[in-house]
Image 1 (cartoon, rainbow, N blue to C red):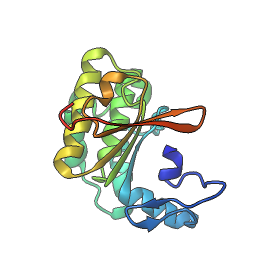
Image 2: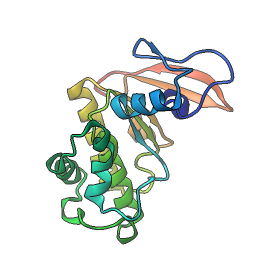
Image 3: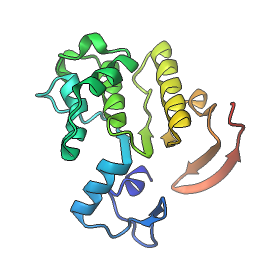
Image 4: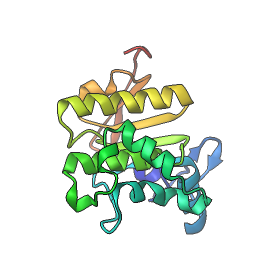
Length: 180
C-alpha cells in the first residue's frame, strides 16, 4: 500500500488519487518528482547511501530542489538525537541510529505526506517513544498526513483513524480521538 501511494509500484487495476492528483500512470520522471516534492518515505530497510555520512544522507533528497541545507539536516539529526553522529557513515551507526537517520531524511523536504513502514522497529523503548512523538507532533503542527504501518499498538495512539489490513484486505476502519 505504501509503495502504491509513493508511486513506487503501479496497481493492477483502478486509480490512485493523492491530494486531488491522479498518480497511477505517472512517468518515471514525474513519479520521482512527485516523491521528491510531496512524499517522505521511512523504509524498513533504511536505504542509506553507505559512502555518505549521516548528514549527507539527509541532504541528498534536497539536491534536486537545489536547496542543499546543511543547517536543516543538522536540525533534523538533532531532532532524532543524533547531532553528535553527523559525520558517521551508516556502517559506523547501529541499526537504531541508521533508522533515525532515515527518519530525519524522510523529513528533509518537509513533505505533505509521510509514509512510515515500522519506523520504530529497531529502536529501544525510549527512542521509539521519542520518535513516535516527533512524527506525530511534526505532522500535527505542520498539517501533514502520516500513513504508518506498524505492529506496535502504542504507535497508533495519536492517530485520527486506524485501518487494519489482513491478508491484503482492508478489514477494519476505526476512528479514534485525536488526543489518543
